[in-house]
Image (cartoon, rainbow, N blue to C red; front, side):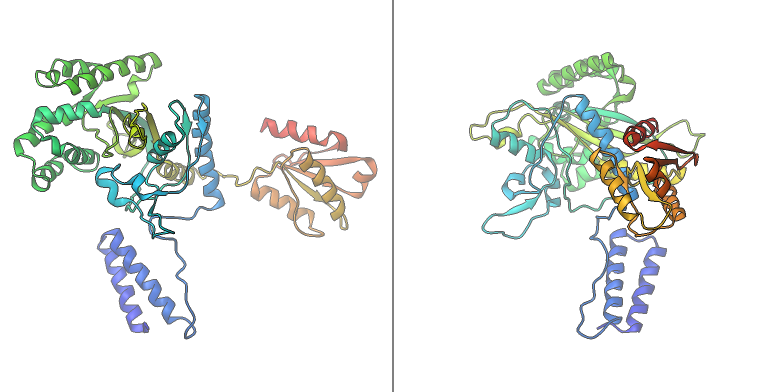
Length: 465
């Protein structure tokens, strides 16, 4: 049982860690310990005390935050549908063997579940491997699908804060990478592990990546230096043409195939008019083992201030590539199904939008209510309920305050606080005349509308806003 002195000592330890800007994981661990000690100290003997916190790496979302998330989802789904995509879903957990061996060094980040009735299960790490399993299981070879769902990783994510300006897209090809490794003298057995090191170049300087290759992974310094000459190159069609003439790469079959496809891709991008947003980047590796061809990432740029000419990258918000061999791993006959996909980093995009909303002090509506049914006098609850039932039946999004005789001022204030644009007011005189008083909350203008015309009037007014 913790005593007060121990709690004070633990609180001081947490304060020092924060002051010294210690590792966030260490701080979180010590904060959790402090909360547990406080819980033990503060209650009745034998009564269990809950530590009210979300698990590390997770968060709750308030109605305002969920409204922003829905805005992000709607934009993405609209784009998918514009291109003819269908939606699917798969279980949140898979057989462990389905996920094993698909993610290279990232496999250690998979959450394994306890034995459940003889099946070894794991929480899904991404949506790609379950999709490949779905294709093989249902013998599907042609589908354009999208899938929005949560995935789980034993990771320690960090969100880089800052002011964000624009996206650009990096592309590369696994065949170019493998060809590059071959001509640089990387043994075949080390391709995937060296690829994993190259994948860290967006987070670590070349010197640290080189040190990992040589010191931890046993690559010769000469091979590492040759890789360094290539992975610092980025450009467009000019660079592709140059590499096609490179005396070493041009002699490698895989690299030549990859560069040929990259040239074709850039020709298509020219037709779409977006080459200005695309960079062919030889440092782009993407660590997952299942990629077989083109790979790409959407990277966000940040400017520290308005006077800086150069933008700096603050991280990937989307990524994907071609994985032609993955479905065949699940198919009994090993049939290959060509696949290409992209995954969008919802959490990072959401954090960016959340910061932008906070900075602009934009008022976010958390409901879509079009009209509040109100009354100005007492004893009209039944009439309010009758009217709101009519509006609901007509598909109008309507609310009523859950009080028997609410004051009109309180009803109007509720509309202003929640952003409801219209108030439909019923009173004794309105009931006699067969009308409803419709009030515009923003302008405070009021008009009497025939009851049979109310639905159409609400639709007309809310469609303009």
